[in-house]
Image 1 (cartoon, rainbow, N blue to C red):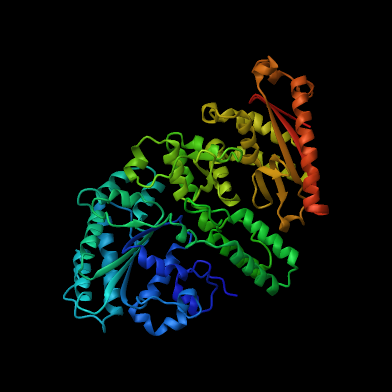
Image 2: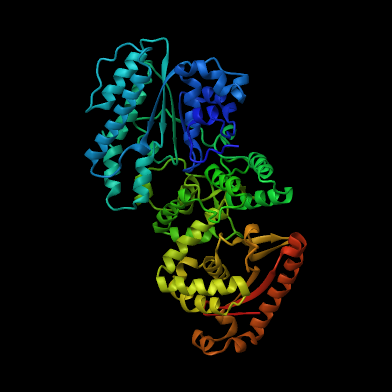
Length: 591
């Protein structure tokens, strides 16, 4: 089996025998959905492959290859009359330079479109009438000439635009730094980007440009240019297209089964790999209706390729190509109340609730408008760092972190914000290393008391002090290299605060499984000041009646959870349990 990691060329996938998850059954309905379509998904989610598939289906120059390319796929059994009936042109705005002043970016955009025009003329030179000129300084005039030439043939033009919002994404990733002014010049008034889409709209009025399919991450640019291009239909939320990108679990399971056979792995090991992939990579849901949970295809292929080549998991569970998404969380965290929302998203006991997703907002809104929870959470959804988890009893939309690999990005953001220094990292590393192998909490709790609790602003964590404690341990202990970590793990009829189950491929090492339960005792309940608490030893604090009761309660819960986990994992489980009580945000004791 050939796995197409990093390949978005449909022709290459099919002709060279790569794995392909068939999504051609959507072609007929997309034809009926409209002539100007917008489709949004997070980055690295397979959008470019969708464009490539459509290009190959409609390209008049590929008519002789239709059976070879599509004969074994869903659309090949029932093709539409429009197959191979278009000239196709593709623009990829991710290839356009976004640095420099607006004139430099404008010229880069003209250059890119002209390159696409030149390639188009070369590809269809035997089918097109002579095009009078290509204007190096005005790519829109060049494009106009091409559309005029197409209009004199029996065919029409289908335009595909990849990464249409690349400019806005770059502004967002770069934070302020003057980027918003440069972007505004490109989209407002007679800015070049707005002019490009006005030209597209004009040429689609019976002049030879028949259909346009646009993909991107968010609706930002479409909102900013709406007065110049108000004809696009956003099909991103329609139930029939919710799995146009992404893998179903059945597709991942079938691929794992084949790899398991190649590697001569037992069925139990293959199922274990599927469970691991589900935890780290599954969990995305698009559209408002209940729908299937989907795997990020780039991450899934990253894992599968390593599993095929090495017959074991990749040591680094997060693909470096997705690691840059932490910049998106950084952007959110820097907005007003953004840090609060980033931390709140880690609370598995209480999903983020909003009335509905924001569908229209521009870069100006992102940078300057008042940010309420709905706005910020909507942006996080488009970026792929939150996903839809259904609706609550009042009909509000519930959002959550989709999976463990995205949770890691949140954890890293909090860690970087609170404890960026070298010494802190080294001290924390020593404490966590000791805890992983022995269960000794002393160094870890010392570090949390003396460093973590000292540097964050209580105003950002005002909704639940127990959550602050839980988040502290999650942030410091998080390791997807060694553990499958879960906050609020569902066990029987209860929820353990934090579970750390050793990854199946890491059980060869001296790592313990851990289960932690946290309790919070406010200082006012103890009728003691922070200074009094600090002056006492942990033995003295542990003997306080309120603390003792909380630790007993936590220990009883852990005993129930232990029994269920031992039943689930059997003899391979090396479980240690930890009842931890926080006395205010001042001291920690455990048993």
